Image 1 (cartoon, helix red, strand yellow):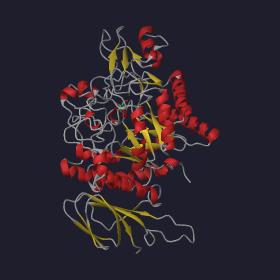
Image 2 (cartoon, helix red, strand yellow):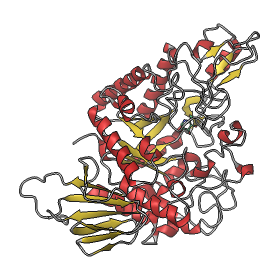
Image 3 (tube, protein in one colour):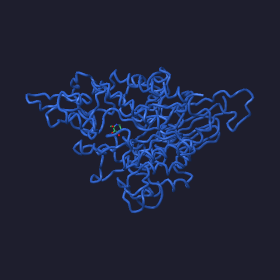
Length: 549
Ligand code: NOJ
């Protein structure tokens, strides 16, 4: 038996938008507790909760002022402990977010650094430098913030500090032993409370080239999704790895003491699968999101290339690939792959393929409902990206709109009636609400539940082998998940006679006929199948139990 995460499906809870147990229109910890039965029935193995720590919320919690305290907006430590205990009672693991690249500018250490002045030991915990130019009034180098604008902000005494994200998120100086020790203490604090692991923010950014050289001029079409080639001096630096070795040693130490395995999952935006795999070498993180699939276009060849490259690279270091199609930072699949009916159809097909892949999978809340991206009206936009980019990028609010749970109109059961959610929900979401979908056999929720139940029940899904089938046209992605050999004398089960499970996804523009003798297990849209010939309509995934040879 391998570690529990090797075939786990983990569900990302973007806390602000999951469920508001109170009446402020913002989701909270008690809201999550109230929905644990929903998550158990969905069939996931656990949840990752986005930051709920004390924060001024300049980046909605990714600006942490105290990493060991709960922000009153979300509850308190007692509410967290209740959530954790209840989740465990429902058989669900709980991962919390660790945000080590930066703190909030309201963190006491940053306030002390500002107050102490240039050259002080306090400033050494962050990255302060003198500016360039005669009066030092130009930033120390040309680095830009991921959210737009310069990555440097000037303090009142004239020095500049680095922030790869918003000015309210100053970057820690990870070469400083106190920064390392303080984060160790945070890791231990949450482990002592009983969490099952961490999702670690911006794992590829913690160490910067000490000399702070200018980045090359940005490409004329802008900095791409994966930034490490355009910005080679502060992403994916060699020095980050020893930090993960250190945390790995901590969780191994806990494991030795109580036998419980905790998981470290990196948010590593590195395009080259072999560079990415270096984060999951045996003494580093256990898992790291493989974003290449998330970045792939709606095309079977692009998916095959991404999947094959990720599988090969992680296999080389003995780790699984961690699949993800969405999160709170990117356009929802139902809108990314198209729009309206066609976008939803593709998102459903994508979901089914995702859940057939070997290794851990992360689902983003609302993707089990097939929610589309929302065009949040400009006056309601809250993501700092909107302001920082001078209104040229709408930001990420569109994938963060609070979930519809029930009812005919906003807030659709997200918060108490009459309380407006922190981001407005669109009209017309009643059919997408979880309660409405639960009683519709053709809904995306029922599809997701079915796929998760099968993934749990069938030994050939989850961890194990993936074997490509080369008997389909290039616009059709097809792979087998062979059955592991059963112990001798195993009685025939419902899948006896099947050689495993086959997943077939078509991104072709027209129907495709394929000869695959077997039985239909699950389909993202209606298909034609007579037990031999499968007529696969465009943008559809099926799971089949093929008959041997
Ligand atoms: C990645 C998080 O997912 C994102 O929401 C956040 O803005 C940045 N890291 C900065 O913490």
